[in-house]
Image (cartoon, rainbow, N blue to C red; front, top):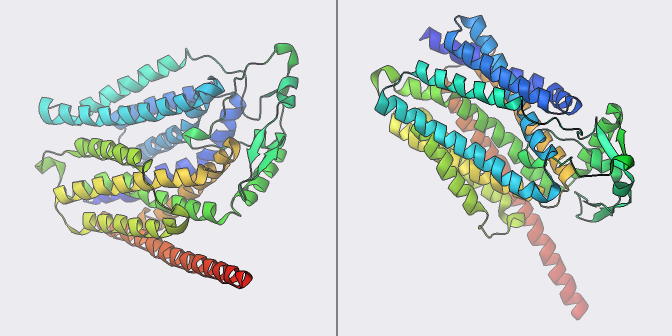
Length: 438
C-alpha cells in the first residue's frame, strides 16, 4: 500500500513538472534546429523511457523515467511541425486529417492488441513493454531517413520578392475584419496544436530567396501584442478559459485513472480490461467528434450554458468513479467522461479557430495549452505531490470532481449573465425601433 502511494505522490508528478519546464525551451530548440534533430531526440527519449520501464529499480530511477517521458511529450511539437514544413499548402487539410487519423488508429489498435494479448494469449505486461520498446526503436531508426527541412517558422525564415508582393489576408481576432499585408504576423510562432503549424516549404526561386534571422526579442514582443488583441475578444476568451480549465482536469483524470482502477479492483485478483476500455473510449469519442460537426445551435447565445451543463455531467462522472467502488461502473463512467470531453473540446476548437488566421490560431492554442499545463502542475503540487497534501487516490478524484463542478458553476453564472445582457440589448433595440417608427 505504501509503495502504491509512493507511485501516486512521488513518481507521477515528475512527468507533469518535466513537461511544463521543458515545453518552451524545446519549442525554441525545435525551430532553431529545424525539427528533425528534435524528432530524433524524441525517439531516443522513448527508447530510454521504455528501457527504464523494463529494468529501472528504485524511486530515483523511476523518477528519471518520468522525466524522460516528460521530454517525450514536450518534443511532440517537432513531429507535427516537421510534417507541415515539408508539405505544400494545398495539402494542409489532407495532412491534418492523416495526422489525426493516424494518432487515433494507432492508439485504438495498440489498446485493443494489448488487451487481446493479455486476456486471450496470456502475455505478461513485461512482454508487452518489450514489444513497445521494439516499436519505438523501429520508429527511431526510420526517423534518421527523414529529409532535413531547409526552413523553419522564424529562426530560419526564407523571404522572397515574390512572396513580399503577394497579398496576405489576416483576420482580426477582435472584430473579424481583414487586415492586408501584415508581414509581422507571418512570423508568429505557436507550439502545441496539430493544426497550428504553417507549411514552410512553399517553392521559391533560389535566386529570390534570402534567409531572415529573426530576433527572438522582436518575436516575443509581436507575440505579446497579438496575445492582447486576441484575448480582448470575449467569446474567444470564454472558450479559451474553458479549454484551459477543463484540459487541466482531464489530464489529471487520464493520468491517474489506472491507479484508481487498481485500487478499486487489484489486477492480481481480476482479469483487467483497461486496454479495451481505453480503446472503447477513444473510438466512441471519435464518433462524438464526428457528430459535433453536425450540431446546429447558437453557440454565441447558449455556448456558456452548454459548457456549464456538460461540465456538471463530467463532474458527476468523476464523482461516480470515485465513490462507487465497482470496476464496471468505473469503466463506464470513464468512457462517458472521455466522450463528453472530446465532444466539447472539438466544439471549443471550432469556436476559437473560426475567426483566426493560421498564425494567431497557433498563438491562441499554444497559450491555452500552456496555461492548462501550468494549472495541472499547480494542482499536482497541491493535491498529489508528497510535498503538498499528498492525498490518496480516492481523495484526489473527489477533488477532481469538485474541480469540474466549480467550472460548471463559473460558466453557469457567466452564461446566465450573458443571456440577460443580450436580452436587454435586444429589448432596447426593439424599443428604439418602435419609437423611431412612431
